[in-house]
Length: 270
Length: 263
Image (cartoon, rainbow over all chains, first blue to last red; front, side):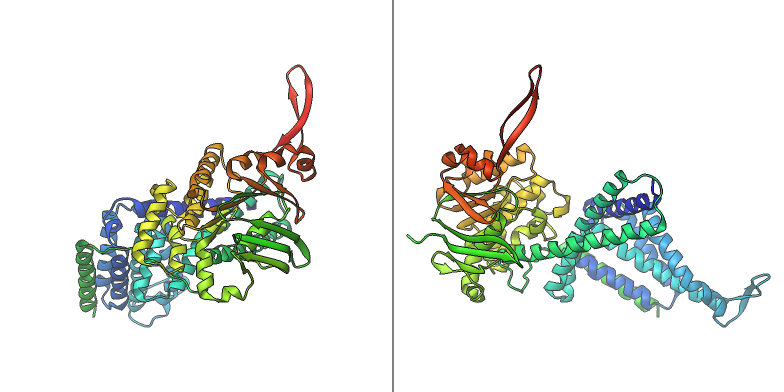
């Protein structure tokens, strides 16, 4: 059987299970799940900003630790966070940070045998700053997404005065991305059921190209029909939205806590 | 009395492909009408014309005496009134469910028509109850079953309390229980004061939901009449591909063939 098709199916299944898992964790009971999405968006953005602006490593690590405590209090699986966030963030940021260890001028702490490359103290510090900031930002952002239904995250973005049409288009993109992903999944599964043997690389490319073509064609038809369905219910070029969030006293308290901690981290980090 | 819809020699084509040809029909207020025809007969196109989404290439189509053309929809007052009074349920619910949650989906129409917020919330809650989908309120549409999606799609139109309800194959690809729920809803909706126009090739549905039928074939109107009259004309139904010879095996008696009506 063709590994290419199986890998594609596995990739699509993985993405869909990630989305479903994220939706489930967003609706499960936990600390962050119970807070108004607007408060979470403002609070988490403030924490990310404070870690980005901090010039002391211990402050950035403390913000990351706050993220960890919030994750545990929100019943997040730390193993899942490690797999989805910390590992990939370490890998990608590590690739960027690695050269800095050697090329940043400063006091030498170690020399790589044979190659003769020198690791500097300043280089190590730069890499540590970059890695800890990236880990703190990705952890906090992921916490927001995993503890808030995606639709609420989008609606909450309206507190930053984002145009309604922008939020609506993002919402529709998310919704139809899922639908088209399901179509792609069905197409690859049906292809798998009719394929025997190994596909040559040229055939794999042809299969991928034809799938993309069919999906594009489906997207065009779908978008035309969606536009008609919107028109049918009164859409005339302007989009209106209903904000049905209700902030409770506890949400205001949490906003105060988030902003206080962020300001404190910013001040201590200077 | 001015009919709700009056089509006179209505012709419509997609690029060079004729979808409807010289079609004339009249639909009165409060009527329950079925548009019958096989796939590709022009039913869905006609519904889109009736909903003011497409416009006639030649001939005319009027709604309550007002000719439907692109110019009339430039008038906000007419457009808002028309969209409030006429609602279309598309065949594919995925086309119609473009909002992030069921609640947003139902609120979309009233929001576009700029209803007051309080009225929107009350109306959406009432329709969620009526359609028995209150438990789906915050669910995203891609997590719903086919029957649930259909009920949400119908609810998203009923929320506007339209005078005219257009339905495109409302029971297609639904399991028997979901089909029966939709049919019950259509039978009970409007207390006979609303106009309901249903496009279908499901002959088992027709007598329940319609008191008048139009039969289309290749974009032309080939017959009209009461459901009981049309459904008895097997020659006509066979010619329009709505029934076909159905062969099946009886135990001990070999293969047996008889006309088969699609449900």
